[in-house]
Amino acid sequence: MNRLARSFVTVSLVSLALPASGQALRLVASGDLADLNVPATGVSVPVEFSEITDPVTGFGLVGLFTLVAGDTGGGTGPWALDVSLEATSPGGDSGVFTPIGGDVTIADYPLADGARRFTPPTDADGTWTFTFDTTAFPSNWVYGLRDVSVHLLTDAAEVTQTYDATPDPATSWNRPFFIDGVSGLGPVSFDAFEFEVTESGVYDLTSVLSSGRDHFSFLYRGSFDPSQPLENLHDYGLGNGNSPFGIPRGTSFISQLLFEGETYVWVTSQWASFRPIEATSNTIVGPGDTVAPSDECPADTNGDGELTPADFNAWVIAFNAQAAECDQNGDGGCDPADFNAWVINFNAGCP
Image (tube, rainbow, N blue to C red):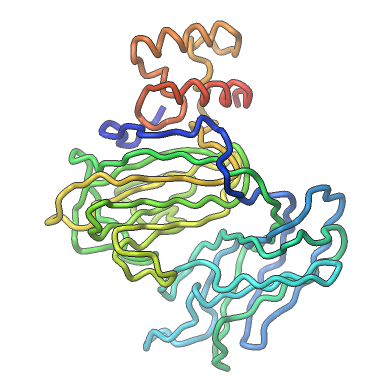
């Protein structure tokens, strides 16, 4: 199992996959679109959905934002932060998600966002209309969306997981500065948590530094290579008090549509080399749990290539010995929460 600098991380609380009192958003349907260019007048696209049995309470967008025409010198836009999406259901109910994303650079930027917009739930089967627009309307702005898909979401019980992340002084990297540059304040230390989700939907990742100092966190999709900090970078959360969403200093927040079967790495980074290394409290809230990446088979605790009840006995032995095989949720520790993760991994099977 790739620990990705988890040696200094301990788990402070894991929910054991019991739902919290709040509501998350779970994916119920997806539709692929052709690549889009969106001028100031906007673009509307019909999408047909059928055989949806869950009540639809929200919608989302996945795509790569790119600049087609705009101001690339004075820094006026368009930004990924300017993307707006309105969804109209077959019954005529309409919801607006604006702004989408959170980037403040003019760059190719991955969008994977969702929001609750229909209360009560709306009709699902039939033709939906998705209208792409901007939060501002200069006549010369055109942005593009590539590899676009839209998604319908339903309410689900929240699952909350929290762990303490301390950047490992044995690791170092030059962290990203927004989505398209690298900071000159490094090299700095980092903590990396590699995971998959057991349910596709919207997940909120919150990293809190109790001192209130500046820090960033970054979400990577697929893999993470600290020597290539911009490769596979999917989103980031400003922890310096300058978030466009009013997130306070010392808190880094990321909200993303995450998909079952995909590998993600959440990296929590020291801000600057002259700042002390401090632990953060990291929380993941969504419709599912987090487990070790599926290219491994962590539930096969005895390593015989099969999943059988004997693996449970092997997990108990590993737990008592505090052995590496005990760690089923990939957080670098061994505690009772790993039993719940072992059950999830066992039920999920092996690739």
